[in-house]
Amino acid sequence: MGSKSFYDLDYIIELNEQRLEQYAVALQKNMDKFTTLLVLYSAFCIFLIPLCQKLFIEKVVRDVEFYWAFYGFGGLFAVSLIFAVLQMLPEKLLLLSTPETYYKFLKFLYQTLGLPPDITDIQIKSSYIEDLEKIIETRKRKLKRATTFYHFAFYLAITACIPYLYCIWEYINLDKK
Image (tube, rainbow, N blue to C red; front, side, top):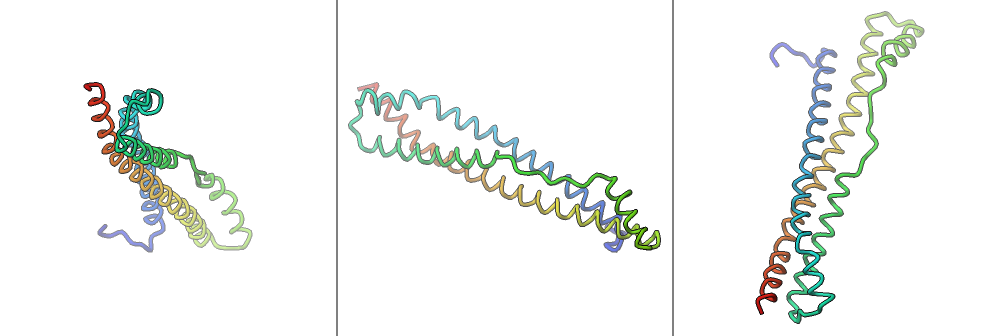
């Protein structure tokens, strides 16, 4: 940081633009993690049809624990899917005003108010910083929301593995009998 000053508006603009870029990259990385969930969900679906056939169509299962494990798996899996969908839902994306807004309209406004060029420059930079900070705050909330939903979806999917594996084990034992 050294000689950089927080009184320097150009430095503040630079910091805010860097932070905005960091949030954009972090949001993209969070969305990329969705493939991990898809792999888990795909693994669950491999034995889902045969399990349902044994439990509900053939009705060869008399073990209550098998049903409880299946319903536990189904509940955890369903809630995990809900959080995964919530993570992927698009939100309104705030964008900065066009540069023309700052160098043309705001500049004209401040000049018609009779402000000298150096004060006009400071006012325009301050308006730009204010807009940047609003967008950064929005992206921060969006990132927090998306990561929270991803973590819930992931941990519920991992937890769903326990009753799922029990169901698979019971299914294999049924075929051996």
